Length: 204
Image (tube, rainbow, N blue to C red; front, side, top):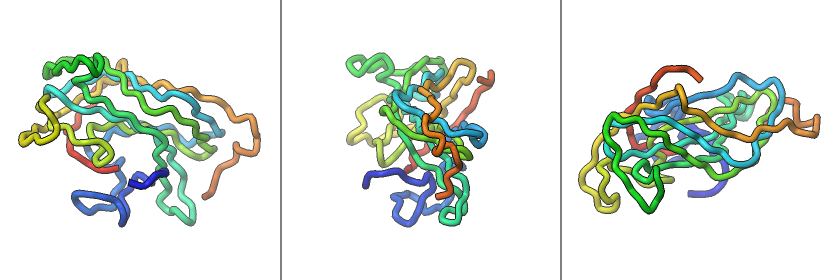
C-alpha cells in the first residue's frame, strides 16, 4: 500500500473483493457520524481517542475508528473528497492489555478505548469532520475470524453482530482555532440509542 491520504471511495487502483465505486460510508457495516459544514476553520492536533461502549455476538471482534476530512464538491472532485486523516483499531480480546487476552461474553457491554495515531489537520470552512466506526479495515489490518483463536491459519470464522451503545460513547479530540485568518476561507481544491451492524471484511 502506498502512503498518503485516500478518498474513502474505491477507485481503479483500490484492492477490493467485489468491484464497486460506492463510498465506504454507504456500507451497512460502517457507522458514520459527521458535523454540518463548518462555519469556520478548526484545527485538530494531538491524540485521537474513542471511548466506546460495545457488545458483540462473538467472543472476539475488531473495532476501528477513522477520522475523516470531508471536502465539499469541486470541479476536480464533483462528488467531494472524503480524506482519511488517522485511524485506530482494537482487537477486543486485548481490551485490558496486550499481555492479557480475554474473550468477550456475547451480549455483555464493554467499555473500550480505541486509540488512533496522533495527527494534525486543518478542517477548512465548508468541510465536515467525520468519524467512521466499523469492525474491519482490510487489507490495512488483518481479518479477525471472530472465534478468539489464532488468526494465522484459521479455517473457521463467524459473523459478529456488534452493537455500539451511544449513551456513553464519545470521541476525544484537541480542537483549536487557526491563528492565521487566511486559512478560514473555504478550500476549493450524545443520543441514547443503539446501532447494530454485521462484520464484513472490507477495504479502505
